[in-house]
Length: 220
Ligand SMILES: [Zn+2]
Image (cartoon, helix red, strand yellow):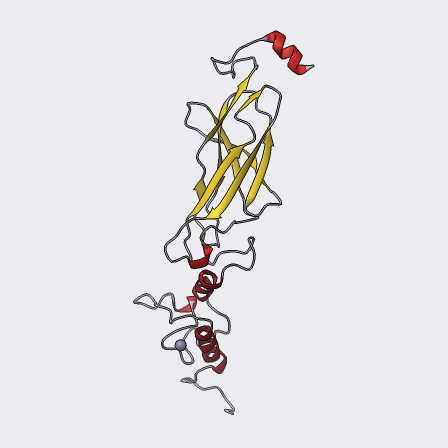
């Protein structure tokens, strides 16, 4: 054994990790022309010798992890997708009713799954749990969305819910803001309209019947 580590040496753990990566099915990482992404992978065609950066990396790089995720899938629906990935997601929103009376409530349920991305292997369609999903609304026929709250993760994987008691007709959508530190893209669902009848005041849709008698029955 060398008494002092000299430049030009390779690190045996780093090389072993490269070989282990091959056992797991990883090919050599294809680096950018300027090797600026060398540190994203230890599974390299030419491992680096001391003293070059990452010569003694002892953990798989984020792009090694990405390849393993596409090949072997995630460890759980809450696990983070490698930032080496850039996956489109599908976000859907449905409501427990499309027409309600004023002062009753409606439950919104959003589902977030990995989209069908080229080369994403086993990840397509994976439910994505415990992320931040916002519920937004806008008066029907307008363009500006307002966030009304963050949806709560439900017991179903990749599913989020929020209950609302709107007093006017709105369009609603779910939004997944693009997360930092994870290889998922942001998304918005298509809008769903929940019509509210029996309301009063300026926020009522013109077409809604204003029936005070029915209101009293409703409220009783
Ligand atoms: Zn190798």
